[in-house]
Length: 284
Image 1 (cartoon, rainbow, N blue to C red):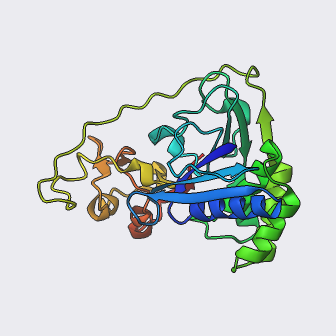
Image 2 (cartoon, one colour; image 1 turned 45 degrees about the horizontal axis):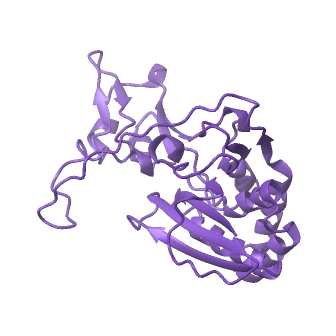
């Protein structure tokens, strides 16, 4: 049995990716299982999904804690979420990123692969510039990097189970298959990522947050980062006034700067900036 864990954000098609992979495995004559795990159910929030594939009936009904493959649809999660937790030597980390596979941080002995699924999705008009839908391109890369399903079965699954723009999604899967880049575990010294897990906050009012965003770091939701071009900044402070998360602060010189640990990448600052000096840049 092979166990695959997907990490992405709401709106990227993470859950659909796990389901499409299961459908492709079924079309290949295998027995799959697929299910998601939701935290905060909103666009941009981290989402986890799981797929198991075997030649025999699968009796397990638990989350995957020791995956053979980890697939990351948004590279920003590498900084904020322990995506490689439980991934043993010999496992595979596949990340949607323009970076080379050798540059990815991973536990020792883990194989690495990368694919620029964002570029592929945008080239085929899947999603928007702010939130491209990268799932089919990532699945194409996964098919080639692991061989767990064939490209033909994946294409049939897309045609049968993707109601919107199946032709474009089919081509994205093919381009992901052709565009995946692999790295040998010994090609570069992997750097294990460390994550500080904060103590749980006490919320006496139940699910209603009783603390400000100064305490709750929301950077894990970000897919695009605001970049301020200070040469055009007029110090109007609109970005500071309109930011809903107190993620903008003003320096002693009066210029604003982004506090990335609080920024969700909502883009309000860029939309409200009168001289349009703020650019939303995709996470690398």
